[in-house]
Length: 307
Image 1 (cartoon, rainbow, N blue to C red):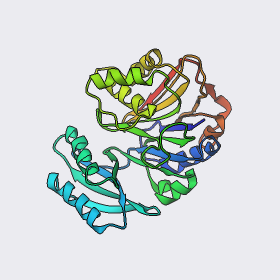
Image 2: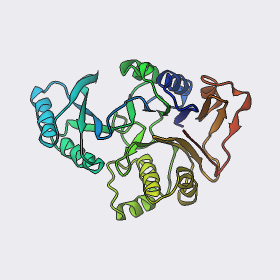
Image 3: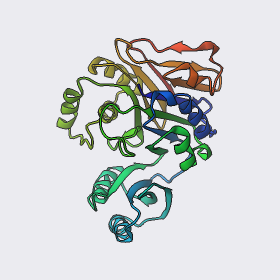
Image 4: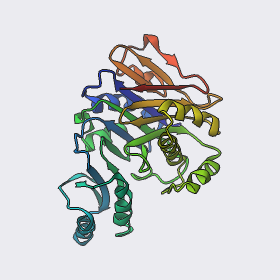
């Protein structure tokens, strides 16, 4: 019974996206008490070859922290760094790096992950900021100063965990390193998950979890890599995926939603001259837009808005 939401500002300019998507997700808090997360696009303003790494590790070990830094510096110098948040025993460390090619990012992440069992790279990002953690929406938003994040569009998730661990790593959104900065939030279940995953693994996709949302983001990235538009990729997913689901994909260009053939998971949308918004329930939309013109996302339907 997870909650999902997304918003795009049609003018393509920077707005208070963190504040707006926080309000949308908080209105869906009843759908998922375990964790929450955000993908917020358009506000990082990094150079073409720059990336941010977000790394969780045991804050009690200076030696471990130094080893993480040394591992990164062996590949590329750390440009800047800061601590984003502190949990009970762990902290979330962020550093900026530069790489010659995007395909070097995932091997570096694997190298950092191999430092120690208590070191986990949450994500690497370029044109979006990912924030996710265990707990309630407003607590997470305050912990990471989400209300201060500006951007052009965003998606978010409140999680009611039915599979996989309840931790920062398994919280939504999920991303893939097949394409840069593609993320997904998902409500439902992909019942032919293993079949879809097997086909992707045969193509060389590497999975880190058994969460079916990770399968969705790999699937979409694979289609776009093979010259599908986002809309075409979403439409094909409805053909290829079984089960009750609705999910939102975000790319640097915009967002899209897909709903299963039987319409077993909710999805609604509303738009005006300034905003395109989608969510699991109307109560989320009314936080950012007049909902007199709410439209249902029908079974087997997709909607896309790109800037």
